[in-house]
View 1: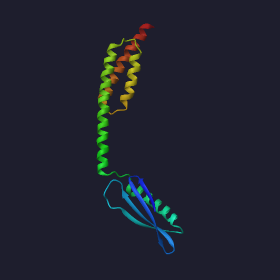
View 2: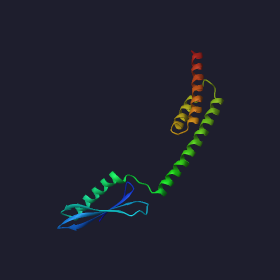
View 3: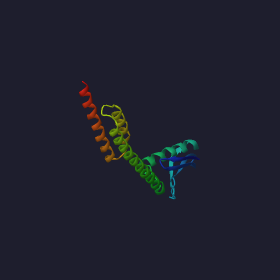
Length: 159
């Protein structure tokens, strides 16, 4: 008997069964983390050894899952992933808003000819760009634009 514990959300059990002097495979496919009944098929492969029949059954099972089963999550598992994702998004949004506020405060404290504001703004902008918060990104973009304009004006005055 061959058992694959997790293939795209399914458990695969393959058992060789004798058939007319050869071997076929009985395949059981069961979704992980559910109480669903297993899908049972007899794969008529007529191999000379039990091991070869099990390999054929395993190959058939993987192809069946790829074609018909796909990646299936149990409702409880899906709910848990959805809640974790929502928590992560809320946390990222709060962090982005905090960073944007800190950048604005730092920009106000720095002298217009300081390159540190541009470096800090670019660094924070890169972090916020990864998050899905358009308001924080727009605020930060305005702050960076103001910082660049001040730096360009200062450079022109120095020339």
